[in-house]
Image (cartoon, rainbow over all chains, first blue to last red; front, top):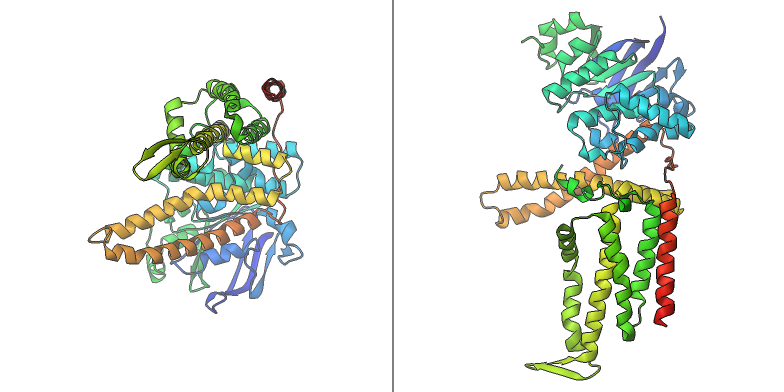
Length: 239
Length: 253
């Protein structure tokens, strides 16, 4: 089987010496949908930020699409990994929705017509066609989240990485987002506390605790193991 | 959401709103240049500035009352000077005495001239701001070959101003809801800390935003799609505008 993401003995320490990741190894195959769950401070976001080279590992290696992620390959590999940040206000930094969704494609050096085509395709993929001229602060939380996803879809990534996609969304916006995520054909990696979303969207779950992989398996196996969940500060979604 | 009022008027639709932002910027700058360069001894010439302003206001269909209120918001800056001039500029003839103070005709004239210039420039700038979305203004600056980096800074300022105002609002609410006497000494003592917190949060946010930019391939060069269209109406407005003031200049000579 072909591994699209391969993380080998990944370690990372912050400047103040705090070790956030301690030897993480995991392989993800094409088309897989993986949830990374765990208590606060387990290193979920830190791990995600390594997947497109925002953070550089202090130990170990990462391979994306069979190539080692380093300074030489970063420009080529970054468009393959679309990262959607937790707070949409951090992700949407341009004055209009169009400019924001066009930001990635323009940086990839695509011609103007192709950029426009990708922007409208990405917006209609997330169900917000016609939002081009709006300003991000005029949008609701759910709309902001969908636009944030569109800003990476427009780069045609192979892997989608989402940090807490359903956080701070109301029920309807959350359902809509889950439907959207379930439809997308990409390899999907998401860090989340929303275990019900995991049941709907992801086939595989990795529990991260203290910067290490504590468990890795099928969603149905892991989310039904109440004892395992509880020992890592998690709550079974059915309780 | 409550900050949406900033862009409320510029989102309207009128012939004025549809003009190319570059046309509007050129006209506004030229107009302000004319208004402030009218010599002090020929103030009557400022009357020539009224028709273009009235025409622009009429065509733009902006709500007049709301518009004038915004003008008033800016007036405290000049109001002080306007009141002081007649008493402090000792030129011309003596007009009146208010207690120990003397009003001079030269000072009064300067004050009137200043008020008229203030009104012209502020109205012109407000019409520009109220008929052009901020994003379009930035595009126009790009069209004038202003460095992209500078435009990017302006764009971030505009984008995150609202986020920061919201953030400080939330902090103030959190402080007040835990202060037994809002406005008391304890509240005051908490303020420097809040300002510091706001700075640190802003700094953290800037790092996250920068990460988000890197994640989408930002390499230091700012790229946008140029989408301005210069129509026949723009050419007509520019030519008409220039012709009007050239005619005014010739007649007034």
